[in-house]
Image 1 (cartoon, one colour):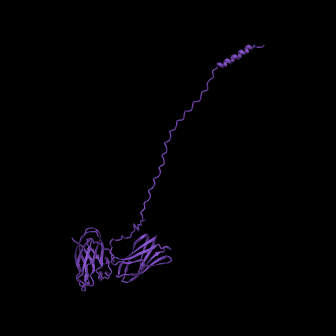
Image 2 (cartoon, one colour):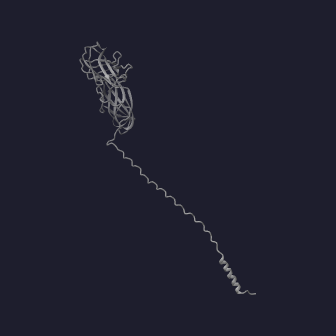
Image 3 (cartoon, helix red, strand yellow):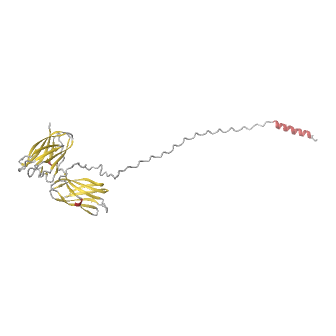
Length: 334
């Protein structure tokens, strides 16, 4: 049986209405991602500070040679006496080069008096350091020298001259090669004391023995024989003796010169000098040059502790000799 066309169309129309009436469920949208929080801008890095420019070093107009600053060499004495000092100049020194050393010889050293001398050498040296040896009459003195572009004085030590005569001496130094790096400017022989430095006793007294004196002289000298033990040969009024000593207990002192004079040589005037003070006495005949007598010459005052100097200096020479001096006594005045 054929269905009517009307029914088929109605069914199709109803189906279409049913589809239209059904509401389509919306798809839930995904939640939006939170907006990113803007990061705090970083603080700007500090600008690099340029390092301070160091100051340009300042130099003296001419190079300064410290010339042994801080060395153990004794300081040069201001106003040091020159009487009796023997100077050897470069023209009197002959240089010769050996295989391993340089040698400097002198044959013209002449001493007018015997006694002890301090050896001082003034030199320049272009190498860092150098060992040397000074030899006088089989008495060796060793010294290590340091570089110095300016003349530098060093003390080698002391030598003893046995009699007034001519002596040779030599200085040996390490070889410095083809270029002469060592030069001697002067060798000086300076009078030096024979005995130990005087010391102040516990009671404050000070004894200045003849052997402890520096004899600034060309004739006068220390005579070491036990029966003499004095300053003798005082035949020139230009010669004088000096004692250097330390005072721990200053004050007023009585000065006594233990001396001798004979053979009709009395009458010379002699000064005793200490710290700007001067006492004078006239030499009397004591019965012989080694017949000791005390001359009480007065009092002096030493106001401060420390180094002191006492000088015996002839003012006049009456005849052939002034006096012999055995010792000087400084006794505290109570």
